Length: 471
Image (spheres, rainbow, N blue to C red):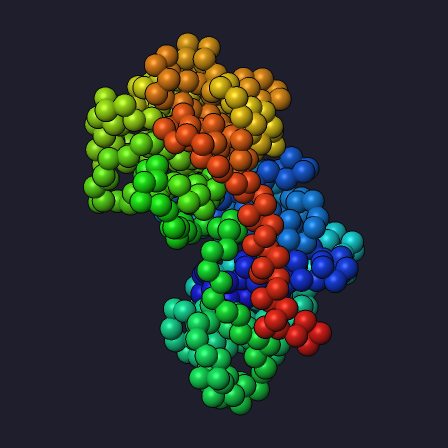
């Protein structure tokens, strides 16, 4: 099991790198994350929903992604509540207290999934969540040491040296563990190191002497990896001076922002995530992303002035695209009579489409392929609650294998769709960028970028870590 001293220490990346390295050696390996809290998710081959990082790790391992890889997924809809997904299906919306009481049932689901994987694969590489030293979360833990103790597996602790204080992170984490948990930690991996390893060596020697545990390896900082983020928004990119400017407002519950990874990697696209309080400059394309709380995020955008910005942007000839929740926001209203995302009610949309959405309890989960109405193959997935109806659906934006999807305004300036992964295929990305004003974009295929990054990551893991030394 890979546990981290902090969130974003590199657990997901290390699991992916180990999975690919072992898979290249012919080892049957599966990734596993007992409990994930993330708003980036994906649809599995068995028709369920898991965290995006486990979907990526399945690709690294060369196996089909199933719901057993991430049996419990928590998708926050507010600061105190989340949708609880077990074995790929939403079971309830719970606050933190309710979920704490539910953990015994969640643990049973976790152990059942792990047992199935362990019966099939030679190695199961488990990813923890956050830090195992969160004192307030120790009781009933199913994500870190609670799980490791339940299945009796060794733990490797990973820390991010780029943040600073790496030795305090590692030693401090050990100090806050119980005696049995400390004994379970087999050793350490240090992540995101830059510079001369010889200058770090005295610190590594001290750490091993202080703890009696080995440092299995030091992973270098790998710039330009195109790997799906678990939850944090990655803003790193390199764009040409004359690039097409794409803006994405960052709402409080933005979800599946991995939709924009292909644009962030595109040398002719300047992708700008616009955070709270930032005043956006003029753009060629504004994209409203998915949301786990569409009504609340729509109200947040209005309060931040995005209603007037969208109208001004359209007056000057700019394009607007809505994806999933963002598509719903572009209509006349979003009705949630059953309180699927929050309290029951109806919220007015931006009114740019003659469409209305009603949220319902059934979640649409599907991997699909198709093409833009204007041409250009697309492939992706749907993850959404609700049904959208109205006159503007007579002009679909896409034609997918199961029928038309989304809408296109009569003047061609506004588009909306439920399809995630819209930019991942080269042909589809080229067509959308041409619509937005960038001709001959020469887009690459995101799956090929991801595959190249996984190979590069595995090379780095094998260079830094003696796999035979791992427990």
